[in-house]
Structures are given as C-alpha cells and as structure tokens.
Amino acid sequence: MFSNELDRLIIEHIADLDEGAKRLQLLQTKVAEAIDTLVQDWAEDKGWIAGDGTWNDDGDAGVCPPSWRPDGETWLAWFNLEYAGSDDGDWSEEKDYYWLTRLCGEGRGQVGFRFYQEEFGKTPWKKFLSQKAEVVSGTRFVMDDLPSLFLPFKIDKQTLAGAVENETIRDALAPMTEALDHIQSNWALFDQLREEMRGR
Image (cartoon, rainbow, N blue to C red; front, side):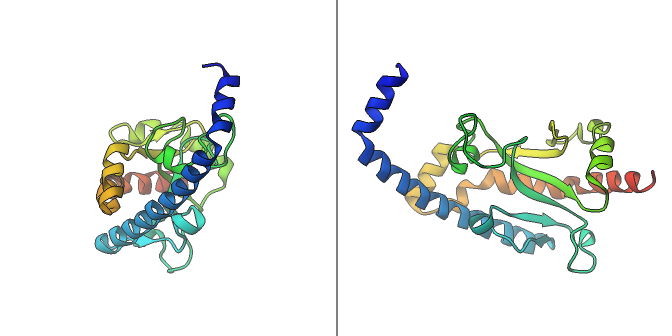
C-alpha cells in the first residue's frame, strides 16, 4: 500500500486509532505495574535488592545481590531493565512508539536486562569490556555495540493477550522471571569481571 493511501486510511479511522492509543496506554500501565510487582517479589524471594525506582513511574527496574550494595546506599553494580542497543525509549522513525511493542519483540526494539557498574570510569570500562565477550559466551547474555552486557527476553504477545483478558498479566511475564533467574545463576561472572578490572 502506498504511504498516501495509508495516510488517508489513518485519517478516515482517526477516532478508532485515538481510542486504541488510549487503551494501549492503559494496558501499558497495567503491564508496568505487574513488572514492578514481579521485580520486587523476585528480589525479596531471592534475598536480592530491588531498586527504588519503578518501571511504571520512572522506566527504572533494577536488581543486585546484597554484596553489590554493601553500605545499603551506594550501588556498585546492578542489572537494570532496559531497551537493547542505543534505543533510549524515545520515539523516532527508526524506533518503536510503544515500549510494549519492544517488550513483545513485535517491532524493531528489544527489552532486556543490562549490566551496569559504578566503580570504574566509563571509557576504561568499555575498553576493558570490549575484550571480554568470551566471559559470557556460555550464557544468554550478549555483548552489544555500546559495548555492554545485555540479556534480552521477550513476552509472547498471544500469551500476554490472553493474560490481559483473564486479568493474570503476571503469568505472562514468565520469560522475565526466567531472565532474572539466569542473572542470579551467572552473577558471579560479573564479579569476576569487576575483580579483574580492579587488578589492572
């Protein structure tokens, strides 16, 4: 279909599209609230620490083991829910409009957990990290082009659709729980990286 024809159809159905956009915003809020509850519950169950921010309010959901926040205040390192690559979450012609599209892997973007650290400067850390892709070769983490270590996951849209209808959104977020479990199983690798960087 030519873009002019599509534009004409959009205008002809503008009221339906407007109502659909409103509904999608409300759905995003419901899913975000379920994400925040999941992260908090998971951290509490595993004896980890969840961040003070929320995905719903701040686009911020992070976790770390207690040893990475030894004084209860400063975060030395953590895993944060993020968009893949250099996607900052803002809309552009090259990016998805809704973060829910990214969460379901139905557009151009992805969602996952990215590893962050605050002990070392960004430039030396990135230089060091660019040489360490093999450290996570046996995991589901990938070295992206930032470079950073990123654990992508996606929520199946059909599963989420059914969960929304049945008001059981948390059940559809199982891949996110699996990602958090994968982080817990492999977090010692990131401790090794930090230790090696410290010894340089």
